[in-house]
Length: 105
Image 1 (cartoon, helix red, strand yellow):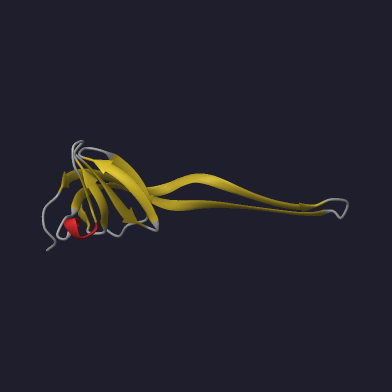
Image 2 (image 1 turned 90 degrees about the vertical axis):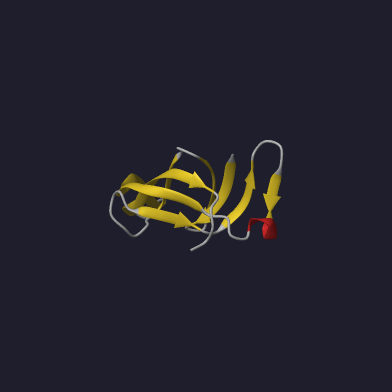
């Protein structure tokens, strides 16, 4: 069984025991996370979308929250001795999916 969830402005296809990397989530390692914004679910034979998913949730456990890889931003204008360099490391959370289905609490 799989589901498509939406969190942090992005969509993720998840199944039980998957570990996904999402935008920063509040909470400490080991805390329970519930995703109620489920867009689609399926089991290989049937697919449910929209109102068929009312009450469907995806539950996971927060494994870790840490900084991701560095993204380097470099701006340059030729022949003008203009150079700017900036780096950014986004904070991301690792979530292990423990259950699909269930009801909204």
